[in-house]
Length: 486
Image (cartoon, one colour):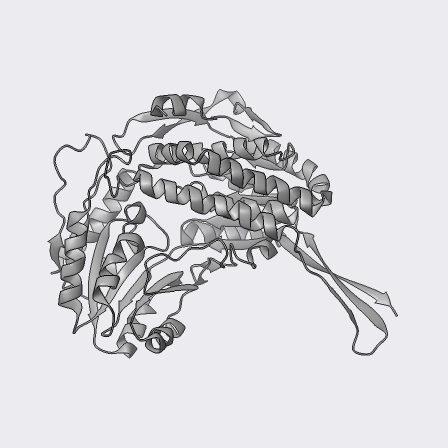
């Protein structure tokens, strides 16, 4: 499909009560193409009044949606999965246009995001309860699982479909209504998803989508006691602040916050496997992924060989507009992201690090785009900021260790604990390292990690709760104890 035609037909209004409507006063904000910095389109900019109108709509729909038969909810989610599959090429292109990501990565995300609707379509009919006799024999204990109620979700820009899908799908499966605020950088994908869910048969009012230029226009709803669940993916500081506000009404909260993932390459690792896995663990989405490998901790005996292999890989990757033929990675999300990555690299170089790959962009890239070259750094000093901060860009920073104890100490020397990667050909060794690393998720001898059928989430300051897997639907259910005389 022609990109301009796709942008023109994509929904751009607030999605409230099953309709796309203008914002209060007709306010809009611009969405930019990261490939060249041009304006793609304008989208309705929701005000606080718009957000409260949307909250009214999902609250009004809550009781009827909770009473809807689980099988009916399941079939709507299944139909959404099928529609996303039918429109995968169109949706992948839309994502690439507003996010800048290589088209192959966008296509992968569409498949990944759609799977949450299939998974939770199956989970919708499986909530479990309890029926047992009390220990003293005087009563029967009944435990029922019921939807928590209206939910508020705030999603990030880097996975505009999947981050929303893994919140929306379990909420709907559980019988909860939801209001979603997508990131202002990438609102088009979420509005497209709202259209798909409407076509799949979702009743009016069950889902609302309110893009906003000011996130506070929507997060202000945390002062409303009708919101019973808040789910957020984004920066640690913002998530913690909003969770503290949600605590004012004792809302159920789940958070997926910052990551600083270690990538441990042990002495007994298959170095070809470990190096090739960088293409996914680091370079998917140009490194703008919450679970992206951040700190490459490599045994000193294999560090030179591993780094040479990674440098060869990184140097071979093609940068360009995400829609370009053969492009491996596209631009970053904005000038702010380019400045962040540049600052971390420059700090490391100023303190004595060596740059093996990177430094210059190839000729022929569109002017105005937010590009940063694939970069490999080594000989990093201990005080380099890049070892202690999430990069969110296409940079491999290699540090070394001499013993497992040192590797684990370095891996855990962060307040974050979202994801980790461990490479060792000895499974016992690999599992021992995985068990000691403080992270909610660990990939062994592979660069891919996420799976809709598995629980996604972190420990320490990387968040609360889990999304996906059997656990995901329970974030949207409350257990009710009913005592019955015997």
